[in-house]
Image (cartoon, rainbow, N blue to C red):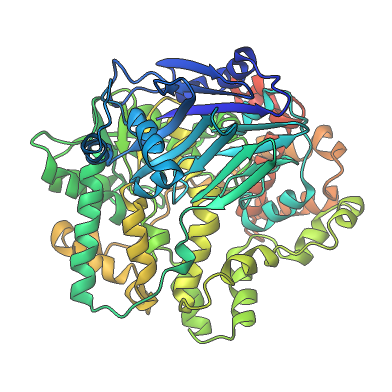
Length: 603
């Protein structure tokens, strides 16, 4: 687990100093070591968090001929098996690092080596022989990667701030902003910075003097769905998840797991117990508001599996982490569950250096109530365009009319030709052979996971130099999930239908069939009282008004309606707050505010 960064320059104007500056601002991702390699036209760097081969895993890894250098962010879980395969082909190894396996794999198999990987990764390879820089992202997008082409230079980084540190202009993308208002996150490949691209999961980029070419190495949309019985589903699901958990427990440092007591985290922790004789260290966050508190479920799961459990309770004071959360995310998110996730990471890193999480189970196997709430009302046989329109409206925060009612006249004119439904339609059109339930999950796999839900564990854990591993986000498990019909994922009112049957014996009925509760904070209530001053301080401020993005009267009315209880505008208000914090940090150039208390932003 690390951060990587670099630059390609067609004129050969590259330096270790520039690459080092880019890496310094993501030091939190890798405080244990740092390294830079400079070639004729590229410099690549790494900030290392040591998890595997602590003594000799220094990056960049360089070939014995000195012509190929490689850096990676992430972990290759099947590196031992690949290492043995390569040894049989005559490769010799000087370290026990998974990064050296990547280097030898590339030297042996070329770019096709990526198809053999099981893991989470962002990889960059400079090949002097061809004068090419290759940047590759893992299948599900567990590890982030961003790119920017500026003149003769192409920059890349695990975080956007690494690219900004290279001096790239900071200009807001009106198109990305328009889509952010719909989804509550910036849907990839857009970013809120004009000219900076979010590399899509399962894609790679090759940069050379001839240009920049993108290529897709994992093509999940081509997965064919098949008929499968419940018993076969349960057997295959459990086998794949168990193997995924086993591989992700490979570590040379102490590790544990996040455990909320929900279905996903409980399943992961239950399976972890099969591969260790020691109690698994588990961590959870509790809330003083019983409507949001899951700590009793976490304790129940802990007692069932005999874990060494650690719990911390939080209240409104957790909002003081909002600035830091936005800073580490590089982009705004209306999802405030980032805040307890950051506190959970701070708790865990006091005891371990790596955790397993339950992220990805909802999107792959149908865990959100939004799925049955839509299909029970609209059926499973809607014509495609009717489904696109209806489902897009079902999952978005602001409609197009609401956005234009919120915008100032000038901002509305800038984006009058845009409609965010085109983003949803683009992805849904890729899987016409999927049933409607599977199509709705596909949209979340394509947008929600890399755009929001995987940003959360990566950025909040890496902010405190903690590695988070996600067993559900295994390529083989994802391919299985995509191949099975929707009624094994959502059936009637039951979410994760087949999944629950598969883990019922492991978890017991109470943990398996408990009502789902989102991991979030009661911020909507706090906006009415303890955070009312904070909210108005930002959204009534001169700085907010002077941006000229939104109509002040509309924002004021929204706040008044929410505070009085007339209309619940929680999601809309937290979106606007996150956006304003982002502007102050990244556009007003006040990154140092990330280290100040929340009140400092109100001034």
